[in-house]
Length: 61
Image 1 (cartoon, rainbow, N blue to C red):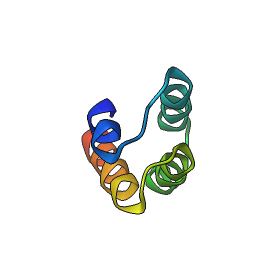
Image 2 (image 1 turned 90 degrees about the horizontal axis):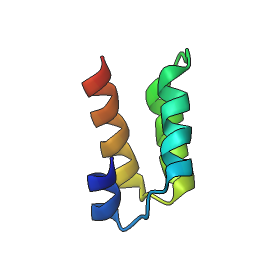
Image 3 (image 1 turned 90 degrees about the vertical axis):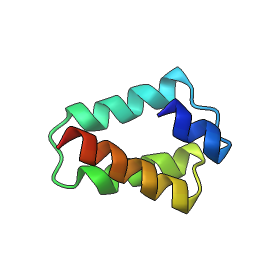
Image 4 (image 1 turned 120 degrees about the vertical axis):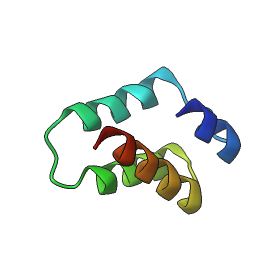
């Protein structure tokens, strides 16, 4: 995560990682969409939010 954040120029703090972890551990119908929206709110560009959310979902499932 921090690698993608650094490439996209976003400083990823503990609070942001906590939000992402909460989404991943919760039971959500659309995990990738929720991740994408959270990453966009943190400050990721559309491209990097999409790449990162797909990578996380792929790694988990």
